[in-house]
Image (cartoon, rainbow, N blue to C red; front, side, top):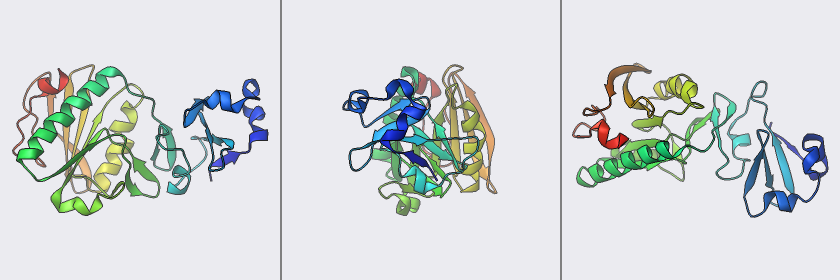
Length: 230
């Protein structure tokens, strides 16, 4: 289980922060310190989560103890730190979300959402994809969070997320029947499109700089990559 340490134990981990916890937290819901999260529990007492990704296996029980918007995703039982994205990442995400919202107003076949929004696949895998689409056929998975596999998932790669996006996440997305997966590489201006074949996501298209993005999930979509990268 996630080890939660009482206030008096904090100096063992944070000798330079042994006093005035209110000053450290201020009005923030949590503060990241050396890979850990300092936050107030339900009684207002500062506590520190001790996250050891090399040894400990976590489940949704521990994940749900983290404060809201804590920058972690639960991937294969590991709590993986996901730092705040850069401006370019957010610009691409905004462009893509707006384009799909416009498309879905005309083609009312489902709903599009963007991060942060939990997508629960099982007790050891709760992700926050950059963007996801859920068709009307799968609308029952839309609850307070997404409980099950979206039809389409999009990840915008950064240096810190590249390996996870290309390996662990892709494997879980395929296994749990995500039908289509887009990986966008902002620095290279590339999008890779994967489609699900018997529980595995196989690359079907790579587009560089410009060109229409093919989608089996959104068959009438006419979206040029350059409009997303602009």
